[in-house]
Length: 460
Ligand SMILES: Nc1nc2c(c(=O)[nH]1)N(C=O)[C@@H](CNc1ccc(C(=O)N[C@@H](CCC(=O)O)C(=O)O)cc1)CN2
Ligand SMILES: Nc1nc2c(ncn2[C@@H]2O[C@H](COP(=O)(O)OP(=O)(O)OP(=O)(O)O)[C@@H](O)[C@H]2O)c(=O)[nH]1
Ligand SMILES: [Mg+2]
Picture: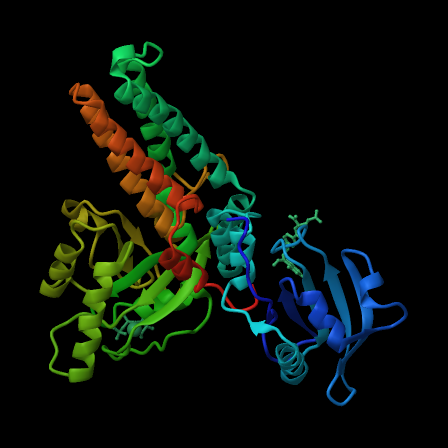
């Protein structure tokens, strides 16, 4: 992996638009050669500057000696760089034109355009970071809250890599013994008995299980809790969305059927993002537009992590309310009695048999919202979100691989317990080892690399 030979590539690393400064970045063995052709530093020549120096000067088009921009250029000599290759970063004026002109000039002088994530991919291929660290960098860029940022920072520092490699070391040690026992049965290797093999496999199994244990929280922190507000027309769904957001996002009227399409907005409760989805009121209807809206609401229900069913507490319960109550029966949901400020006809006691937690609120008068938020948080975190002390796996790819390796380890345990041939145990352990290796990128194939780095932005 150390001999990953590549061309020299360049990209714009800042958003293209109106900004004070723009950065064009270039990495590869020809980076210094190319910058030399287009950059005139003030004072001494580019070669004479030391590593990690910022150099003032002008970008000049060698074709016609025209000044393209006044810039600061950072010189970073490999291998002690982000990519482990020579890097230059040109800090030019922001805006669309200067950065594009400079990128074009680099290309004219021998650079290729970098693909998405190309810089980070090189950092990985050249062994500076492993795959979990590369993925942490995408997550840092995409973080929606400080909490998810914290988790990704920890992962960038290598905490997950360390855990995975501990488990892999354990498996590798065991495999060595297993193979020896299989290859030379006449020696009847004493230093690792069946009991010991079993114990070690269990240990590896528990370590993987532990990592998976907090991953549900991890997904919610990373992607947000999909929270659907459902209920009959006019019960106050949109009013609740607005008061949770603290702004008049959705249209509210006294006319039933106001919300036709769904509206999605994020709120944060104690650092956890909730994606709140306001839906069209669910009822029997002949109106085609409303009908599509309602079908969509039911679809959203299927995909949500949490459902807020709203009932209008000032109206008697009817058939449709009972239908909706049935719909949420086996789901993670809260029952909300709205319009508490008006005279109430539904009492929480009437709903006891549904065994749902009930919150009484007034969306309009903003009563009971704090209690609602607290309950929403409780509903999605059985263990609470005191996560600092745990390793939290948030990445779906990692979770999937951990689950698969857990299966292999379970199967290995079963095989040992049944005193079946060691060859079978060895196969399962090898499988688990490879699956875990895919997390860190120790075992990796081209397609997976492509999938991961194509999610990066250009210039990273
Ligand atoms: N201008 C600029 N800002 C940036 C980056 C960058 O590449 N350029 N980064 C990235 O996108 C991030 C910083 N991350 C970095 C990580 C490693 C190295 C690096 O050169 N590591 C070397 C040498 C470290 C040293 O001097 O001790 C190494 O690990 O060997 C640089 C930046 C955020 N800000
Ligand atoms: N008194 C009182 N009125 C409320 C409350 N919440 C909502 N309303 C009123 O009920 C009516 C309907 O509110 P919406 O928020 O539009 O109801 P909705 O469930 O989104 O309705 P559709 O989009 O039509 O399904 C409006 O006139 C609101 O002002 C409340 O807590 N108290
Ligand atoms: Mg509405």
